[in-house]
Image 1 (tube, chains in turn brown, orange):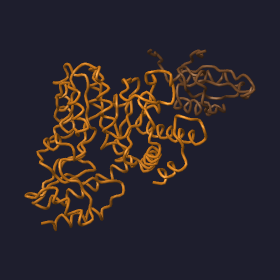
Image 2 (cartoon, helix red, strand yellow):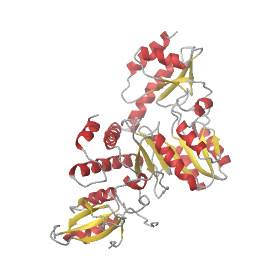
Image 3 (cartoon, helix red, strand yellow):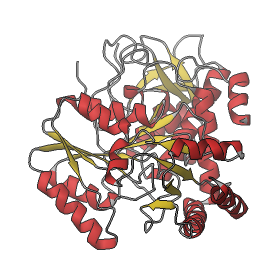
Length: 94
Length: 354
């Protein structure tokens, strides 16, 4: 399999469901811990609180991955800011 | 030392789990990437950790296995360039560094030499400064030439990182290879491979990356694409402190200090007719000399008995010694902590050597 990502990482939505996660947060899947930390710092500059989390194997694109947990109210803005920082968005692999 | 010790005691494994100690470790690694990226004009994700400059150079040269064409190297290169170049089974062409010349005339002759070899050249590997005499190469001009001619440009920054102003974007460098333990004042056992913008190499090491575990290939993107296995977190923590030290002191200040000590040593040694100084007219933080009729190892052994640590022999750079017409010499390599008093003591001891 080859990838044609032109920029670092991709962003995918995973909307928290169920009682095991906070319902007022959402998650973005990042390509690696490096991009998760970069994304966290970018969002922090804009006042958006993001926590680096480990995603489940079925939440990432090819198994294990890291993500950002963000207040649901900020998710759209966060996605736009990360896109502006040249981090691509891709659909979640189900 | 404190950073290394603290990391051993208090940090987890970076880039794998997400517990508090692992995330603290991941943050430390990321901060080191940022520090290195700022120093060398790169993006943090293009900063790859290795076990040293030799490892970085082997990865870079080895990763070019699918690239066509010969490999050009300078006549100052260390064995960490020469050996992987030879092992690559490509045709290796060696261009002159013209140590007898200086200034724009020298730069022009170097580029003319490269140009004469550039037909069918795929890769050019060049040191930014010689590890035996500090002689600098015109990296920015070579980078520009390589970019114009589609030649992948790999720089050995071992002797220059932390003192010379190197910027991978400005200088058109595709891959910059650095050790942690020289001018970056980090511990031995770690190094950097810094990629230029939009440079993608095939991975050379394969294994766990902490992400994309179901894929049978390494991740598509740097830095994890090139980092298989557990990172040397304590060494990276030490390296970050070293880079921060250099940033605080400033590479210009450190270089000026080293060059001042070098000139002081050369001036004093030049009064002794028994001493031969190599590349005497070139400024750098290194002085290479020999004593007529004496083996360089004997000189180094004597200086060691006087509490002075220098290295003798060929310094793993036989090409460079041949270029300077040396069969082995004593290398005095200055750092930020050396003093003028130490230079005076060194000169006294050398004068007393029989």
